[in-house]
Image (cartoon, protein in one colour):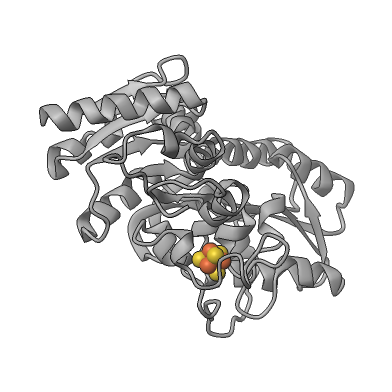
Length: 337
Ligand code: SF4
């Protein structure tokens, strides 16, 4: 399983499934921040967008994801002030330029983005900017890997571990995977040769029956990761449960803003009432995220669900598996194309 949606896109884009022997089956995993955002959390962001004097700052992929009853895009069309940003710095600039409004940054992502969000919270504290808030939906990688392996639903021999996440956390947090589950682990970069090297190392480990954690992305990842970035995260966030689309609540898998920074915590500053969440009918994003179905097994794929008219987040996000299959899945091979 390639954990990361970036890997899924690279694998399909460069035809890597067609290059590897038929005995190697690649499965997509949950490493797409937009895709794993639970519908109820998206509904919360949409409800916050509808509050008076609020500006929502979000990465663009979130805009078109359908929530239970609306989307950020529809809310924007109906008059909500929702702005696409490319970094937390952009969001802070919006807050500085609009002191009479409250800016809520929708914080999604894994360990890769969490340090930058932490840094933004420290920055607004230092600069005494009072109108910047974060809705922290950030999630952690190793706990969801454990949850997937624990469920046993998706039978895995090896994991292509995410390169960018591992730049921050290093290789040690994956050691439980070979130790407790006997599953091979190799950290990969995102170039086609990185991925091929990673697959070769995984196959070697599996054939020898010696699963371990290896780094096939040594130009980016050190075993200890980036301690400074982790210190930033630890200072600002505490670990708590998180709600994952298609999986549910996983304890110790989310990042919550610590009490000392609660002024920046959108959950504390803005109470919203939500109707019970509804999942898009017929959408199998949850199964795709857990690696138990491919997008081709969803009856809506290409027929009703397309990038122009997405039913679920996996078709919207630039890291979503359904979007990757839609964009690149045109060649015949043994895995369903
Ligand atoms: Fe959901 Fe569309 Fe993917 Fe089907 S093809 S799982 S409806 S996003």
